[in-house]
Image (cartoon, rainbow, N blue to C red; front, side, top):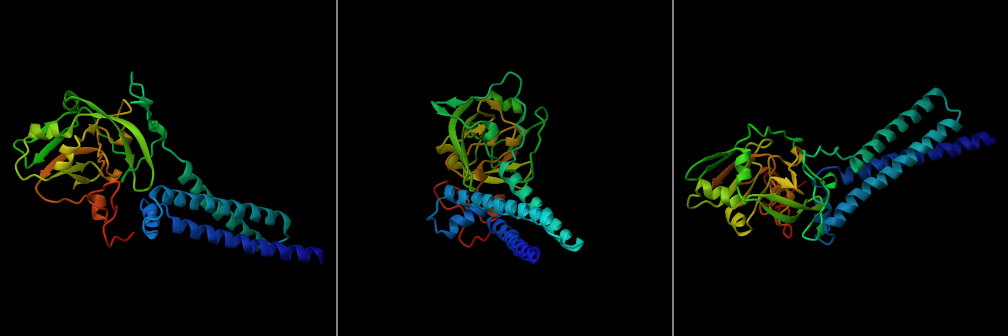
Length: 316
């Protein structure tokens, strides 16, 4: 009789554990692991929740799901050790444990994994402070890539500058180093809610454009990249000139790593990260409005960090 009551209790616990598994899956689906999920939370709150808190909610949901999953796994392990289920019952519990462990592993991976740091070039030392402000170490900086890291050979690299110019340019990496180098203390802000502070060093983009000879009527500068040859993004020429935008050959005094966009990353100050083009192999000047990869998905073409991220009618 006691055994029967215990088994009935364990069966109720097992059903509760199954509900925990289902709840965990629902939380993970709602939270999502995509780039736009933080923005969905922000939009759903009509801006009442700032993007930092929205990102915390997104990540907190994953942690909550992880707790549910861990509880689910431990409960089912205990049930297997205590019950006298037939082989079929034990098999079901084993499957439930396996599913829980896989999902738990996925949560842990998404929340804790970071790519191993790339080795520093010989003789280079990473800066930890600049202008009296602490810098985020490169190994702790978040980073996104559409199609993974692109690897560009330094010796064969050529940056083409063409379009509405007086003369097309084909610049080697060493040519970029020959321009006067300037350093900026600038935050990179992502629509996901994260940001970091870094020292960026490189030449002014306007100097390169002037060497090509900007024709009258040019309004837009398009950045063609190795991973998005049709044009990853663009910036207004007026913005580039007014803000003295640089292209960063170095990050925290380290030659820009491949994962960060070598040979350079466009330092689009005061704009969200999707305007900070990486792995650029061609710059085109035009007199037309251009929408890059993320802009074609519905993201705002201005990308100002204090402005709207998505266009009206955007759907995730």
